[in-house]
Image (cartoon, helix red, strand yellow):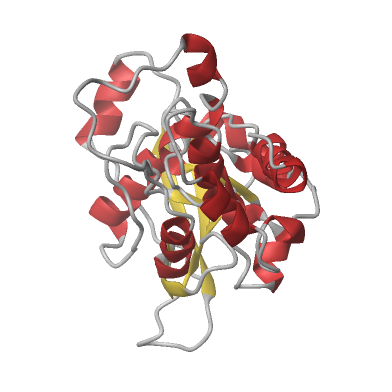
Length: 256
């Protein structure tokens, strides 16, 4: 296990001059490069930073100042794009929404790729199976007849029925926290079911029966074991397990 060092920078001088209390933190990252070695290795990096900074800030500093080969996904850095989902201290989180001070910086902070999807390099996984499951549940409005000449109106009450599941940002944190998904790569997974829920209970949609039949498959909602891992992992606070239960109930009662 190697430990790269960091030089005292002008930024640190400025922080100290401004009265910011900096701390030295060890980040233990699970590195994997199939072109160099078939097995992953843990590598330690030390940084001096403000504990109110985010894990994503730390990863950026490591990549920009210590090791440019470190590979991870990021985009908006504001918890909207869902690109930077990863396991931080054993829990699925968004690196851009996780503060250093909240993950026990007195001990090494472990960072690794999310589980259940093939790791391509370092913290980057193959998202194709995840997005294929999303596409399979037809996550779009389905209507019949001619194109309307006016807006499809919907009451506030009807909109409230599926409001929670509109919040999904497709980060895969819920799906990759599911033990069923870890052991069965064919399972649709919580995120796909959540996005099916969003349209099944939309009063303007006419494709609910089709989606329910898709989710009635042996790899659909009936594989869920209600462990609540998905709800706990969701960075948007979606009640994922509740949504899955509502889809199960709709399959039985055909009421939605």
